Length: 287
Figure 1 (cartoon, helix red, strand yellow):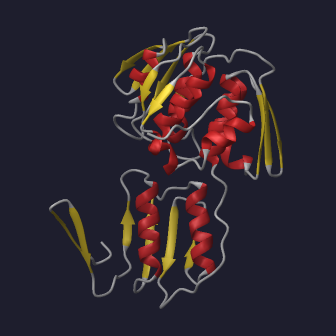
Figure 2 (cartoon, helix red, strand yellow):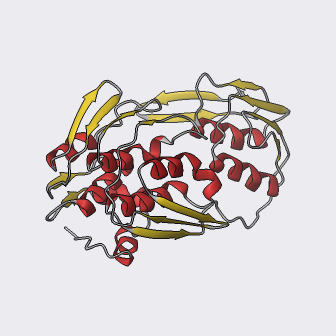
Figure 3 (cartoon, helix red, strand yellow):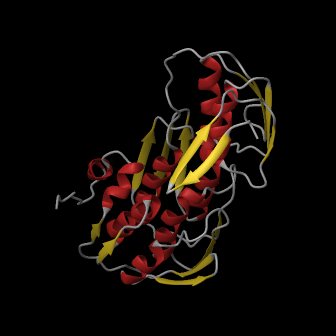
């Protein structure tokens, strides 16, 4: 729609344009990556581009602020309609990327699944309301300050919580796998419905090998919480599934070994070292 010629050939995408031209973009579904790509392309296009049904994740707003600092002209930040007036060039800037709410949420679940406590610093709790709400529903005591979140389970077993993923500000799909692990050892029955991605329950068979009582029904997994999991030899399949297996391993009895943890490194920097600081017995073993 911006005037580029796109060709998919032999597994590669070839894109070409003499000059991009502003236009109206209508997304049938909310999509983070497409919103980001159109945003960046439109900043240097001729004319005005309007993105309708744009994603509203904090990361989108952060990108908009960065681009505006570089000289872009973007309005409607934080809403579902973004208006980008093309400029001739952008300038280099210094920009601090917004804190990773999914990484923070993963560590919060790590404490919740083990009945422990944690303080996560340098995080904007306002961007995590859906995740924090479900942790409170699971029985966690949570206190928030300007740039930190403290969670304390006080040794309690978490309560089962129902989850339905959706676009921001609703419950994030990137926390679905972690809450599946939490529900696996929670008190009670629950359901987790995935509405964003297809085939995003690759962690369910692996958790089942640890003794989790999970049943897949289409895009929903029905969880019957068990009192404890048993360590097992597992295979990681993607980023968030890998994280869920680590969390389950922390709560399980015995030793858990997870293969193909390179998936983790896409979204977590030295996760094993950070978990060690919390008292976890975890090691990365080189092949």
